[in-house]
Length: 391
Image 1 (cartoon, helix red, strand yellow):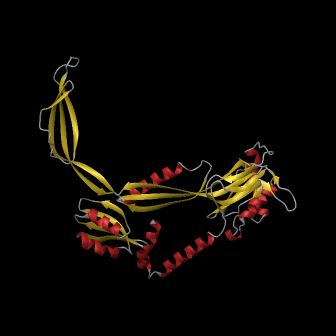
Image 2 (spheres, rainbow, N blue to C red; image 1 turned 180 degrees about the vertical axis):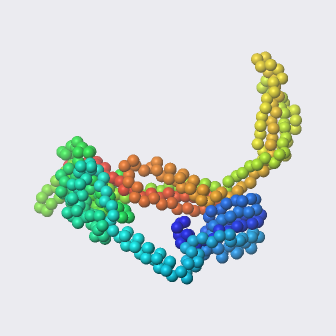
Image 3 (cartoon, rainbow, N blue to C red; image 1 turned 135 degrees about the horizontal axis):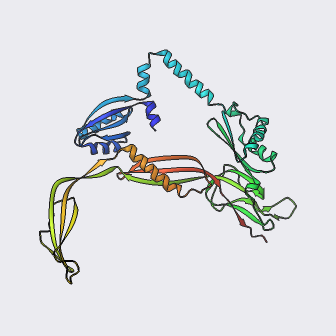
């Protein structure tokens, strides 16, 4: 969002008035994009507003009586206006952008995960024989073909996954000896989904494929069947097994108040004393406290030495009046705190072996609170082997 505002342009404004909280509330009600709010004093604050939303502040200014002035102009729009007559400079920027775009169309890094340093060169030669090398066009990559060739050409490789991120090609290899399994191949089984997901890839060791890549599956749905059927032949029950990788989405929300409560001492105090005699409490001073908000400090004074049968003491409660106000929180800091809180909540649901593919945050204002929704997309193993009730 910051990049978008930087490209379109925004202005830093100074807002003066006694109704600053109402000014912010009306901006949110009118869906005017305002951020970077900073309080300078009780009647002055600064903020950032997009160029498109700035003219819409007129109605808010009229309704609140606040004064708004522009202190700075930032972003690509104003930068372009400043340099619009410097054609050679703009031409150089355009050429640089074109070069960056062209270079981003190539593969500039290849990483292989799951192999030792001595095996790395061998796998790189295999990739080169398939036409995969540094400096090739990304559009010429066939990720599925790379995965299949590594599994077919290496007996110890049971699974391979190739992913392209920017200009880097990452290939993850899993070898059979890294996770040996002792399975009872005589017991008929099937593989079902452990959660709702979208199937990304499948490695079937035994059984019948029941779903296709890209298909949405529900928890408990059969992924690899344990019943093999052929024409003019009886059914055959097998021990279905394999790996099914799916894309799973998680979502959690966290909210924080838009305003922070500040309390400052006014200097006015009131002391109320009580006589504590055994289990009785006798007020010495009037108990009416005229302060709406106050903090207390308590002190005890022994009248009779400790250890007697009926100890007596005087308790003095000091009431200190406080001025309590709600101050708009800094929006950027508030978003960062809400984002961290939402991420911690969703992280508790992520499996340890899940690979995070995408992470996004969506903000909204509900009942005076900033709500942050964390949306996480993962790639994880969703298959579970269960016993098949065969006749």
